[in-house]
Length: 239
Image (cartoon, rainbow, N blue to C red; front, side, top):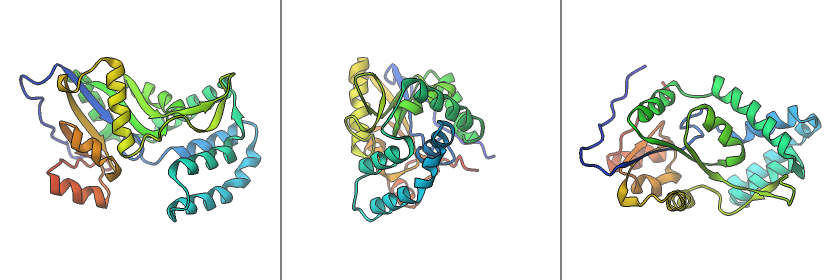
């Protein structure tokens, strides 16, 4: 695999160093939401839910046709595959088992190398993803991340996981808003931080523009065109 060359942090730069990574298809080989749902349906004692997969596919076509939003698609798929609610114990078991599988077989070697390099350089590792935080945290923990910013889930009074988004879907401009909100909670002023940002998708254009060092990783067509126009590095971790 070709060794990627990354610029050193400039001397005199702000003291707080953040390396912010998207997850699906940036770090992982594949998107993770649908595989997580299928994994949980198979292992949670309700494998009959797999018979609903064709109906979830119809919902996905509705999203492609712009008939429903990404958030609504997530709700429909979760309701079909996981049911009305998931207990904290079931949620934890499913997230841990799925994370073991993803980290074992589904992470780009180039992503692992870059994560380790950023850690060694003193960067605080943050994962910012549209995927639900409740299962992403187990993946991030295994990869050594310090924090996770992701889509939050609705819960009932007893802490059971429900289908639906609490707040915004961590996607597009909302992802940048949620990163900035996290920084505010952590007491990190933007002018005091040097930010590296890694993502594979053009929907993250607002965060690319905001970052000090944007990296268009494994860039698909629209992002490749934008990155060329902006002069952003385009590491290929798929090789």
